[in-house]
Image 1 (cartoon, rainbow, N blue to C red):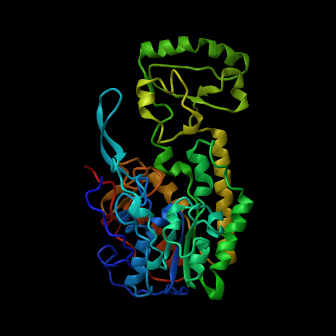
Image 2: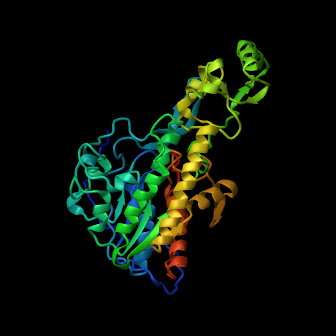
Length: 445
């Protein structure tokens, strides 16, 4: 239980200059008007980090960083966020700490931030402190931006706590402010629910429906000459969530390899009879055994060894792998694995979404920030900024938080700078960039 309950506040962001590039230059808006800027999106926009939305992470959201740049240049009238009352949010936050596994080995990794979080302060409405310019709502898909009642008690609790009317849409909360400029990053959740459930959960949003809903949003935000930026959707292979657990992580000695070959002798006979690949185990690293519900594998009990390029989720129960034979004696359940077929579906949807984002931006003269390309480049090459290296590696890479999906403060600053680059180029503006290393990364105990 927390010893101190922070008072419920929603404040106008205090915009200091210490985290923005200090070089003096002639700032300008160019063809844009930043006076009333709104940011619309999901958890990535809200400032969600390490499994939860909490105050200090919100204060380092990429909208807060961009707003700081706009404020330093004297262009933005106000920037408010519906700040959570403290550091626990709704109780799911992770922190880096020590835990002991099933073999009695103590190691450093993600652990609950609080054993007994008090979430009641987070449930209280802060609508009277609005309107808010950061309208990021964790969990939101494109359709949710235009869904009445999404902020009701039966809707999304993150939106319910700050909407001015439970029946308002997120888009209405934005258009009521008559924005002159908008930054919209939405669509990740239209495919992410499917991806993080190993293809067993929420279906992928149909690309045609996605495009129609997104155009409704952009069209509504483009009245009276207003414009903005659309951010595209990154590949799931650019996140720590899907790249931390290696497919070949089953390490065996000679006796273990021999025992598994014997135990799967019957499987291999069936595989040969059905023209399927046999199980194979050797000394050293091996491919895990996974569940695959594709009918192709019905004759062999819907299990097989994972193929190179297929992905295992960060949330796989590692104690089950370490001590209880998951991935060897028994398969890794389908919900923790993305097969090549599922990845094809995901990649096809993301490509279609990003094509629609580009087309819609072109129609309404909005800019497009290529977040997909940014994260893909960091995944491939890493990035060195001011003497500090960043990568997509879990914990040590500094880019992703402890949930493997959402960004650290450093990561948000990198994205913010990419958006600022886009704004400056497309609108002939000159906004200062953030000093990435002045923001927060993974905090070690």
